[in-house]
Amino acid sequence: MIFSKFIRITLISLCLIFMTDGIVTARSRLVRVAVLREEDHFTMAVHGRYDVIDFNTGKKLDARVYLRPALVSLDDGKTKVGDIVYNASRLIIVPRREALISINDGHFRGDVIVINNKGINLTVVNSIDIEAYIRGVLYHEISDKWPLEAIMAQAVAARTFAVYSMEKFAARDYDVTNDVYSQVYGGRGAERYRTNVAVRRTSGEVLMYKGKIFPAFFHANSGGVTEDASELWDIDLEPLKGGVKSTFSIDSPHYQWRRNFRLKDIQDKLNARGYQIGLIKDIQVVELNKSGRVRRLKIISRDGKEEVIEGKVFRDIIGPNILRSNKYGVEMKGWYVDFVGYGWGHGVGMCQWGAYGMALRHYNYRKILEFYYPSSELVKLKDVD
Image (cartoon, rainbow, N blue to C red):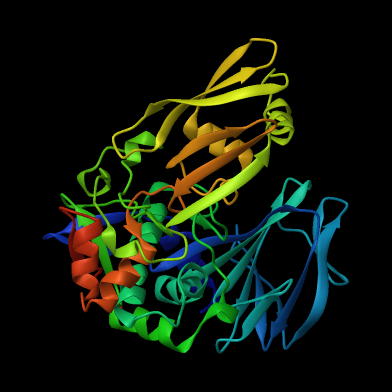
């Protein structure tokens, strides 16, 4: 029985998503979430019975009742759990009867794969049912106090992004990370009653465009109009073309903002990223894209040198949570500068505060998704409860 579960993890989880009669079919319901990457050590506990399996052979290496918080580290290139050293490059910790596994401060359902990266460091992957994964995502991506229809729209978008990642990264050790570069995932500790309701009511539902899953990006606030994905990534799809005028988010707290910076601080950040720029005299917007976001900036130093930087690169250097979006104007103030902007996030796909505003106006989650992902189709994954 243990070996059959090993086969399920190692073989099925590597399969892709395919089409059958216009309905998406998931050969695997397991999402592989990188909880930790390239760490020297971490703390693990198992709250109940569990087995330790060699990922590569399927051989059971150990069967235990309970693991108190133990240090997982490297010992002469091998993986050491507490006082036990395992001579396997990959271990699967398989809890029985839904026992929870704790990794540092997080509590997780499903199995945990500990990958020994050639004796250099460790990567930890949580292999989890896709619906349980979405339950662990929603609370970190949207408020559980918001209208249920907005939370349900977020559940579909998050599930769609997860399935897309499962397809795209099937050959990699994990499908998604647990941070803002994929979707923030908190495991069992992030589950809440109302977000769980939203997951259950939309169970298995995903978005497609012309018969294919696409990355259903989302962001906090569009600043009035959504962005074209092609401005940021090599993606050219109708549901992500941007230009959706979202007036529903105007009353949100992040619709408009102003940030003041010392020019020397901006210079230091640019220098740290390899730009040879001296004391800054002026910052000019030289090109806007069709959504009104900054495509290119010119930095002029006091010695007369000029540097043109892409808006998306400049925001990344300054910090995406400091320079909240690329939809802004520049006001020079001597040795300081004000950026006066709109929205928060990259602006592609669904505006979360817009979804909130639509839900308050009694739009259901299907209408919200239709609005922010035009030309997309809502379908249901087969074999998902």
